[in-house]
Length: 359
Ligand SMILES: Cc1cc2nc3c(=O)[nH]c(=O)nc-3n(C[C@H](O)[C@H](O)[C@H](O)COP(=O)(O)O)c2cc1C
Image (cartoon, rainbow, N blue to C red; front, side):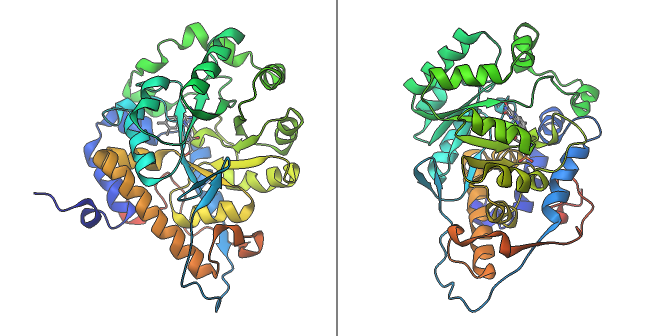
């Protein structure tokens, strides 16, 4: 009989190693890969590794609280499961499994519109705090229908992903001939996504009261436009390095967006976040929530829903340890003064935060 998960997995490295053993080559490459040369994937890690801490000491950290606000609620950590298309290729139950893990641990889930079992069944699977993310593959009425269904099923916010005007060249998938059933409808609908402009954001805000998130903002200029259009959340992301190659790492983009927004909207971020220390860095820079893409999928791939919960438990322990060692007792106390810059130590790669894996 296998040992309980909290004994099998003491570290995130062991979880990722188990996922690698379990997942077939196609889904594994789909999950870890990026676009073209995967420079953006690597820069996500490089940007995080180029930030060092300035710890304060002798500050009574006998009680540390890692919980965080999320759209007016309280979550156990300042993280969210980022939207993942085709999760059903990685874990049985797909998004429903992710919803169960998110609810059990106490963090929000953002559901991708290209993930099974879909908006309604995922909502029915668990009482997670949920947000719906849409790839626009239809006209305004089609979008409005998704908003109505999201509201009817308890989604508390709506996200448009805006860094997918073109579907990128994912060379690991191309070389492996990995067929994605959830992309089968793309040719029919993809012109809607490439045709999007700020006019559609204006139309959305004029018509719908649900909080709107724009995912895939990567410049101060677009952050400013988002705020001018009344967008509630600016989500700094490069899609985990899976869309535009040769972009900056998300942690390197964050400061200009924080400065441009000046507190007028919430800022979320994702891209390469694999460790508690990474999350603490983003919060200290001014983000309120960190999206996790590959990491929760690796937890699911390692051991299903319990594997995801175990991943989040280890992450929580890492965040609490980091907060205490920085001399703060809550994430609200973090400021840019806790950070400085330093040359990265590791050659960046998708798994460079897990050096025992021996990539
Ligand atoms: C397998 C996979 C599928 C994804 N599918 C979507 C999607 O359907 N919609 C979306 O907005 N982003 C999607 N993303 C991007 C993630 O939401 C997130 O931005 C990215 O994974 C964050 O980087 P990280 O994986 O380094 O944490 C996907 C990412 C991965 C790894």
